[in-house]
Amino acid sequence: MIALITTITDKLIEIYEDKDNARRDEIAAMGAGGPDNSFPAFYDRPKAVKIFC
Image (cartoon, rainbow, N blue to C red; front, side, top):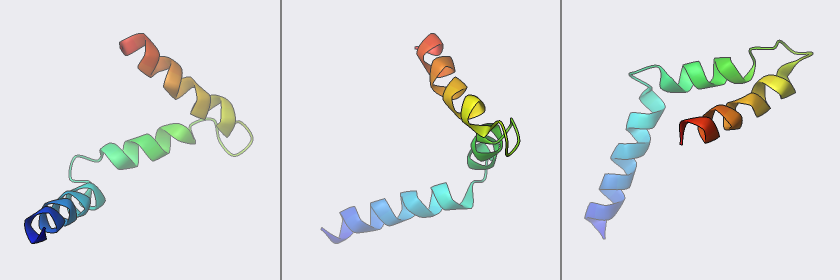
C-alpha cells in the first residue's frame, strides 16, 4: 500500500513540475482566444483530439 501511495505521489509531483511545459502550453491554448473568446478556443481542443484519434 505504501508503494502505491509513493508511486502516485511521484507521478503527481512529476505532473506538477511540468518539465516538458505541456501543462503550461495546454493552459495557454485554452485561453488563446483572449478573455472575450476563450470558449471557442477551449471547445476546439476536443475536436482536434477527435481528429487525431
